[in-house]
Length: 210
Image 1 (cartoon, rainbow, N blue to C red):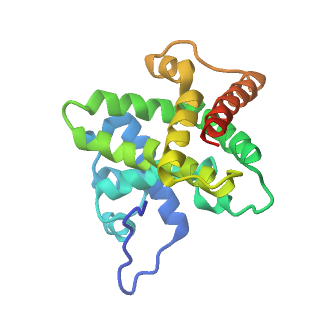
Image 2: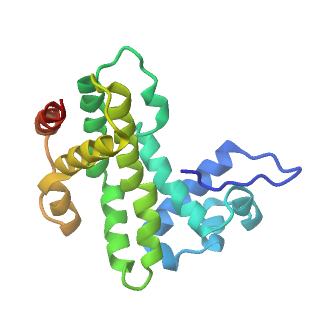
């Protein structure tokens, strides 16, 4: 999904400043929430002018989307990692599944889930934005993995069903506990075993289709 960046004539973008803006925005969204954060606050926090912030992002929604997308990219959940021709489906699910589990263990990710839940009644739009850039993005990514690497051809509809099943299995109980502030963390061996179990279940789903 595009983060709706725009380029101003005569003002080449600076990747370093863009990164500063994203980092500062991420911190402020966690502290003040979406509604309580402003582009002015982001500019001040990142040490750039408000004009610079707007040169990279049209508005606060575009900035929020970019913050979520940046976090997904940090865990390699983007299309660049679908171009490994010699991978099979299990290898892809094993790697990407573990990245998703680690993403859901990320304290910033847990915090933003809590922020969204806290604002959902007063600002439903922020929940929609988060879903589009976060969970929906992950589901679309996984569906592409199934379409690209499944042994037998499958439909987009079935690929989406596999993606939802796999993602739900990955979230499991620990994700709910993390949002509620309960003890949740899985050790590295537990994370690996958790992903392997999810793969086994989704393989059965694929086999039932053949």
